[in-house]
Length: 422
Image (tube, rainbow, N blue to C red; front, side, top):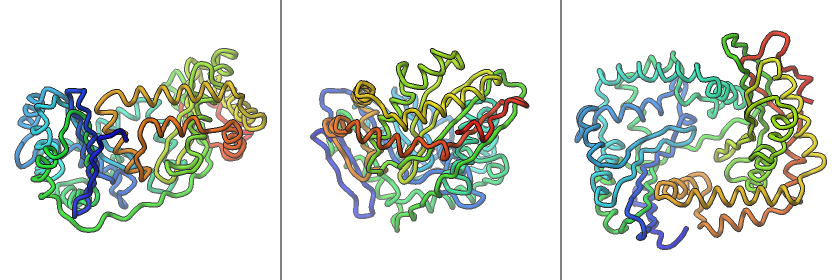
């Protein structure tokens, strides 16, 4: 990372990263829990997300949601949280003068939540509404169907929100037990970027760090291998079918991760990508189509997402398969590779132009890749990918026999068939 970078690990195992950026006047701080939905046990699906919600319902210092909300507004910036498959994060961005208050608030959230039973009952209802809303959003729901089947039976298949059955069982005792076992010093990483003096921030963090229980880090979860599947889920009330086509790829630590990233750009990463030109511009099968990477530490998926009229879903899949096969057989061109590299470099540079983005980048690299690289090193990695490496990845990965499809909203007689997958 760009100097000056302060990096240390406490005796109890909490890693701390601080990037000083004296040319800005804001500060971004994140408390990262290196545990997410994939670390939940049987009948715990959604518990990590439930904890993320309920710590905001009151802590020892901010005993109720109203007090906490007022304190958040007084910061003048923003405070938020999210739960993912492999991490949960509590973060904020404020002016440098408000950093002490931000440290106090985030520190309380991850060390002294109250888990009041009445508040938890209300929040269960909120999360059940969130699940219902997700089911009413076709793009969200088809993605959930994809995860549940692509990593079927494994930790990555756990729905982040949980299910109605599991969420309905969560009470204060289960919340406290999960929190006590998970929110421990060796499972946390603290990252900060902005107008910050490392010594001053370490002093602010001391009271928080002293409250974190020690112990051993939670065991690493090894994801199950992806499986090929074909799923048609009719929804007659939908005006469009939503589709996810996916292929297994390496995780964050894969040696060809950057080649796969550029391959995704060539396949469906922009208006000049293969899929956009073929499916939208030439054949008017859809309004929007794109390819995306879902990377996790030790597994991943190259996904193509699109929506179209139900009567066009089968042709859309057939033409997508044909484009994948063509790219695998004949390879990309040098011009396509250069455009992909420019897209990747531009996205990377743009992402480094805010304190919050830099904080997120430091934490992501450390948690998922076990190393930190500065901007120049990351650009060098992009530029180093050769056309031969890109085309080798295409030949190896874009195999019709490995393709999985989740289709939501297909009609009878227009379902995706195994024969459509090549």
